[in-house]
Image 1 (cartoon, rainbow, N blue to C red):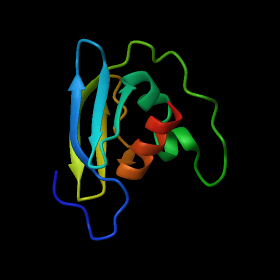
Image 2 (image 1 turned 90 degrees about the vertical axis):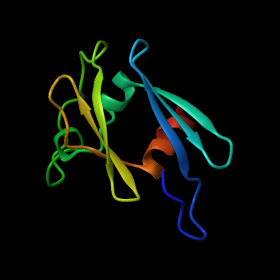
Image 3 (image 1 turned 120 degrees about the vertical axis):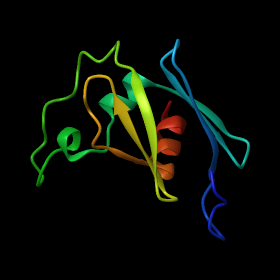
Length: 105
């Protein structure tokens, strides 16, 4: 991961996907460490498909207990795109959003 901009919020220094456990581990430069399940990440995707288009709230995402992450794609210096094995790949998980999910854990 590249260096954070000056004055930036806590910055991830490493993302590791533990395939056997279906968990994304994230280490931050302030020493915080979070482990987020693929299921949690999938049902909380920041995509319009999950959050709703134009203010319309879709039904909650369910049945994702066995979902896995196929790959992680870096998006600039601010986010990652997670590609899930159920075909979902449209959510951009910003570093701040991943931190928020981890803290809510």
